[in-house]
Amino acid sequence: MTWELARTVADAVLYEGYILYPYRASAQKNQIRWQWGVLVAPVDTDATGEPSSSQTEVLVEPRADTVVRVGVRFLQVQHKSVEESDGDGFTPVEAMESDGELFSTWDEGVEHEVVGEFPLAALSDSPQTLPIEIAGGRKAEAVPGGRIVRERWPVSAVARVSAERLPGPYDVVKLRVTTENTASADGPAAGRDEALRRSLIAAHTLIALRDGAFVSLLEHPEWATPAVAACANVGTWPVLVGTEGNRDVVLSSPIILYDYPAIAPESPGELFDGTEIDEILTLRTMALTDEEKREARGTDARAAALLDRVDTMPPEILERLHGAIRSVHSPAGAASTAPAAPENVPWWDPGADSSVSPQTDHVLVGAVPVSRGSRVRLRPGLRRTDAQDMFLAGRVAQVEAVFLDVDDNSYLAVTLTDDPAADLQKWHGRYLYFHPDEVEPL
Image 1: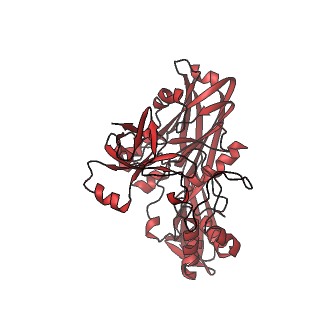
Image 2 (image 1 turned 90 degrees about the horizontal axis):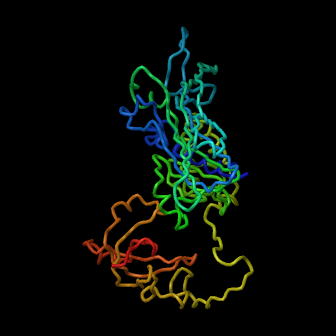
């Protein structure tokens, strides 16, 4: 069941950016496709700048009979060519109207999942391989005035699975899964579009354990810190998935995620852009003209299904997309012991809770109290997903306030001491935020 639950999140990764609003083949943003998890044939690496392999390393707390299940999931490019009848044969065209319906030339994606199971104990002595061989094919569909030709090219790859028991007092195993495109070719592809035809698209890995548990690489116990540091993930970002607290399935994604990612229950379906707000994108889609919708329907079957869903969405479903309020503290009906908030003060304002004072509160970092005015060195942690942290690591900052979030986690609001705009940021209240364990008191 956890595997199936994980697949719902994995599908969002699989189709992230598959076709972007306004969902038409002619749209500028749809001219360069397939941005995530592309594994090209080795001969195409230099020409495309894309890698031919990815590597995932995770930590396992093993049992005597632990079994590892590995699933490699990806899309295979399928070229949809629209061809117009000219009497003597067929001529490829960008788009064609047939019996009142518009068809556009377009690259579709065919979903594949290859799964293998291996005893964990055996992987230490004998690494295993999971062959991935996907056949090509060609199929023509007659339509009034022409035909639609769909063509796929063979895809060859392999997943190599191995394990290594790490030294030390803790019983922990490092599990490695390397996925490599092994397609052979006489020479580099003429261009990126041709290279993609023999590539794995949006490639990611699901790894499950039977009778065993993973160690989170983001929120791991202190004893696992050296082992986590020894894991090398190349082109992947492994996180725990499923019901929070379960540690039996990992999704290794080409997109940065957090542990236990989930699809919001309010979301009625895929919009192919997980970084968008559902309500905004849905309203924009509703605002497309009839001609724009017609072209989108002729571009891709998934775009047509999206439009059908949006056009028939009941008002109560659309209203749900406006937002949701979820309790993060006491369950419904539980009594609260917190002091009552002053009237007309919003819950998120520090003034709503007299026990909180960001300007005078302090937190202990080790044995050192840190509060407003303290100087610290920034040490961004692994749990963070901001790529700009690489520019902040090691920088000296001044603490401006100590905040609590709605989960009662402490955060330090800081400004960089060598930033000439620090005074302006203080005036605007624009700070950088770090957990107490991500700073070193000076």
